[in-house]
Length: 251
Image 1 (cartoon, helix red, strand yellow):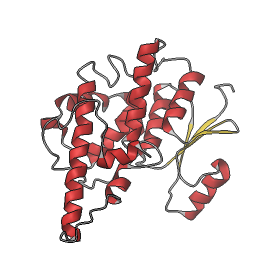
Image 2 (cartoon, helix red, strand yellow; image 1 turned 135 degrees about the vertical axis):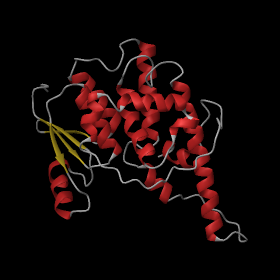
Image 3 (cartoon, helix red, strand yellow; image 1 turned 45 degrees about the vertical axis):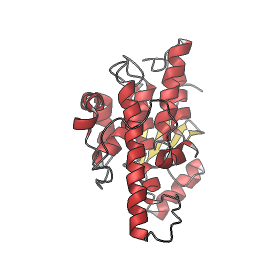
Image 4 (tube, helix red, strand yellow; image 1 turned 120 degrees about the horizontal axis):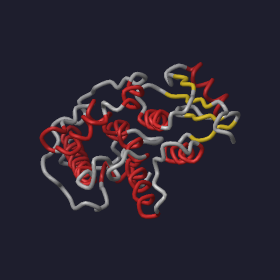
C-alpha cells in the first residue's frame, strides 16, 4: 500500500491510545485527516462501527483498509510505511529495547484499557468480615498507589541511560509513553520531588512541536487521582509489577 493514500485517524479527545498514534503520525510528518468522535453519542458510535467495525477509537484507516486499533502495531506500521525520520533503530539490540519500552508503556494504560478505568474498578477482593467497605477501598487505593510508585521508579531508571525513554534519541517508545505521562500529570502526579528525571523529561517533551500539536486536540479532565503518591523507590527495577499494574500486564 502506498504511503500517499489517504490516512484517517478516528480519535477521541483525552484518549491515551489516540494520542500515541497521533503523536507517531506527527513525528513521521504524515499527511492525515483527524476525525474526532464522542463515544457518548450514539451517532458517532454507529459511524465508527460502519467505517471501522468497532465501537470505540482509535481507528486508523489507510486508503480503504482498516489497519490497527492497537497502539504498538499502529506505530510499527507507520514506521514501516514512512521510512523518513527513523524512530525504531535497525540494530537488533537497540530495536529490541525500543520495542520492549513500547510494550511496557502500553501496559500502563495505552491500549483498549485506561488507567482510570482500572483505578475505579479494582477487582481485588478483600474478604475480611471485620473490614468495612470504606476501609477496604482505602487499602486498595493505598496498594494501587504503591504499585504505581514502583512502576514510575522503573521509568525514572530508564532515563538514567539517556535523555529519552529508550536512550539518547526520540523513538516510538516515547510516542507510546508520553500520553501516559501526560495523563498522570494532568490527574495530579507531582514529578518534581520524587522523580526528577521524569520531570526534566516531561518539561522537555512538552515543548516538542509534535506534542504541542497533539495536545491541541486532546482535553483531559483533571481528577487528582494520582496525588499524594508514596515516596522512594519501592521495588527492584525489572520486578513484575503487581496489583493495579499487574492487571494491565495480564490483560
